[in-house]
Image (cartoon, rainbow, N blue to C red; front, top):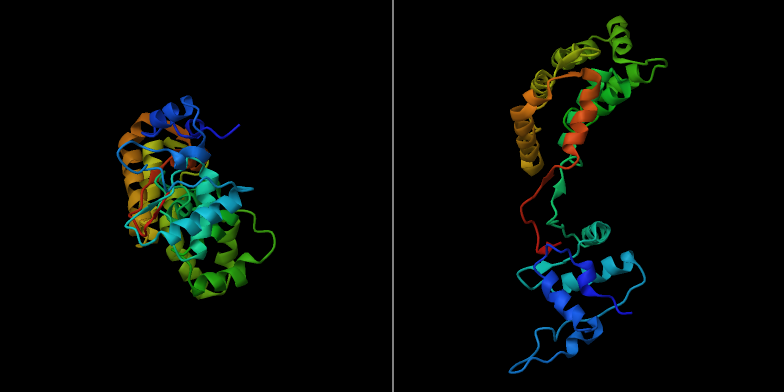
Length: 272
């Protein structure tokens, strides 16, 4: 049986009703280009029905057709298949194009969200691996991070943040002591909540305060602005969540971030 267009278009799409009517009439996709409209040429005259073996071939084909039509003001790739969208994005990147995903970009997948969660996990869980990942993010990375990695982090049996601080305190490297001291001063304000119950609102406010103290580059760009808006909304409703165990805070923030989307400005003429 031929593929029914109405079956693969979201019911909320403005095309759904039209395609349902076409489907009900028993018209095949392959016959769409042969439809004639009295008084003029069919608007479907340029529609092609092409079969491919898999999503990878489909993505490559869609991208090549979109690039060939690049002289137009706008090229749209309309699909509700998220896997196909992701494959199209990979294929477009090979040609130097960027994809504007009309479904929105995941806030959780941004560098600033990653920084935020690593910070919460390092401080509230005392996790050395998360702390290591935190200082290696673009927002904190420096030559001192390399020195710290070589001289301190590669030592065996450093299991938590407290032990890490003891190792650094016993070190004779004053440069590393000073660097970590400057880093730890704001971090310690969130670390002080570790293994305690606290108001969710207090945790959020301190969390944001530490982020501000550690880097001036977090809120720039579209993802940074989206993250600041996310925190603004969380702070506005934080009192409703009451008191929580601080160890659950990182997971709770991850759950709040998971559905959050933002919509970057148009950067190319390829739209999904």
